[in-house]
Length: 198
Image 1: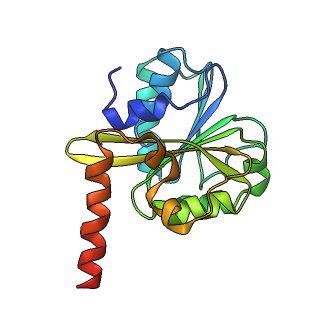
Image 2 (image 1 turned 90 degrees about the horizontal axis):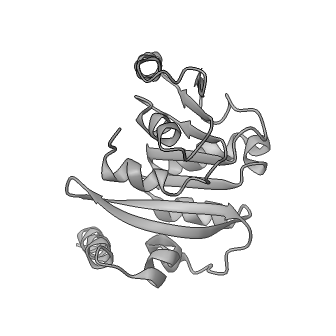
């Protein structure tokens, strides 16, 4: 299966050989890819809504992966048992929605080794929540897919040395790494704040 660039970039951040949980899986493209590429032995896929759940169920069955992808209907991290997933993926949601999902399941979250997060908005608020709740920003990526730039945040348990709210808004690892998309990304911030000031 060939994934869109955004999903492929998420897959590249998942811990190898461990169980991952894709929260809000939609069509289950990412879990199927993780299994078929040998990145994970098992994947948990959840969705809140019946429609996407049925779509995911159909795709998983078509790929013959019913025994290796555990599909669950439920809200956020609530369908998970503490300790059963080392990586948790939350992508395509607002940063504050992701923050709410994480804060509602502290027992599950405490045993997760890595978070792979792709907020559509409010990434700064999400980073601020992470660093104030015992997570460090282990890595960050920018990926361009169909003309839009997406931010991926990889967080792990630990102490984040950066506490400057401006740097957390922009992305401390993104600023350290640089790269060809960084200028475009930062210009987007400048334009947004110029509109607000105007």
